Length: 110
Image 1: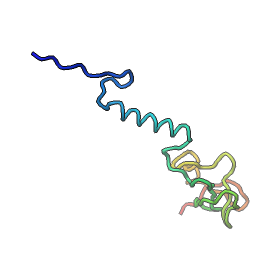
Image 2 (image 1 turned 90 degrees about the horizontal axis):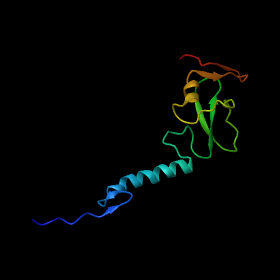
Image 3 (image 1 turned 120 degrees about the horizontal axis):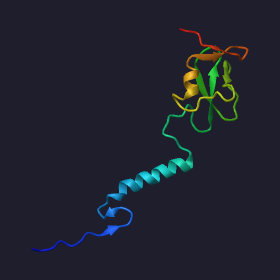
């Protein structure tokens, strides 16, 4: 009976058969996301933009940093700015808006 040669082992991945490669790729990707601040969630606006709220309705838009909101839009109140689709403030502003005086009010039902 012929004995099979022993398979080479590595300290990190066990037997050398490429099993550690997918885990290594995932680890590198996770590290990249955590270092760069990237998120898998959908951002409300793209890079270099900020969200604005339509006065009197739940509509919103994105405006380039350094520009003022267009007529009929205002900046979200400080600390209540939605950042990602479905986050706490995105959900909140689905049923609230600001009136012409800047007061937060329930959004009109339509």
